[in-house]
Amino acid sequence: MNEQTMQTTLNALIADAMLTLDLGEDLCEVPEEIANVESVMTFEEAGVLTMNKGLVIRMKDRREFQVTIVQSR
Image (cartoon, rainbow, N blue to C red):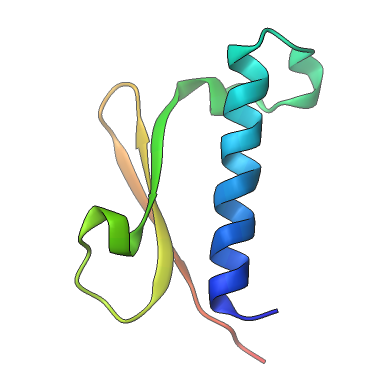
């Protein structure tokens, strides 16, 4: 696994959790905080000027988090 694969995997996990909520499926399987996520974009999609891989997570209340992915080994 490399940084790109990890970025894709994390993005898919969050998207799947959001979709589960949208479909009204069992909420016990999805962390409560996911319900507050509005969107998830890669750094590239969000226009973040960096060579790192990562995600920008925007919450419904407009807070925004950046998760940088750096392979350490």
